[in-house]
Image 1: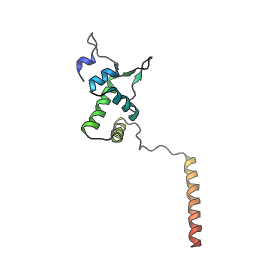
Image 2 (image 1 turned 45 degrees about the vertical axis):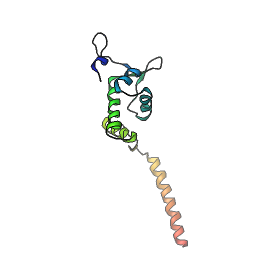
Image 3 (image 1 turned 90 degrees about the horizontal axis):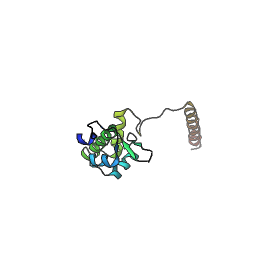
Image 4 (image 1 turned 30 degrees about the horizontal axis):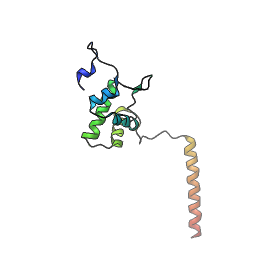
Length: 125
């Protein structure tokens, strides 16, 4: 990222960036950034009162990681999503969810019923 684009006119580091600024900085079209928001749960820029996307430095760093994974390393979107989730410690689409006791009891009952049906079918043959 260009250091000049991260500073305001007083030389202070900026905290927020508009989508057009992020687009220019990353070399990605705004529609790509919006699409990636829908594909990567880790990428969730804030929105202003007017509904404009407001990106922070961490969002831009994440976008650059995604860009590198997709364009340079050849990851698929699903693969990049999984890699980012693993790095951040967040859930990925393959992360197991806790199973309730009720679910286990219901599953056990259904499996017992299947076993009973199969056993009765074998006895007939």
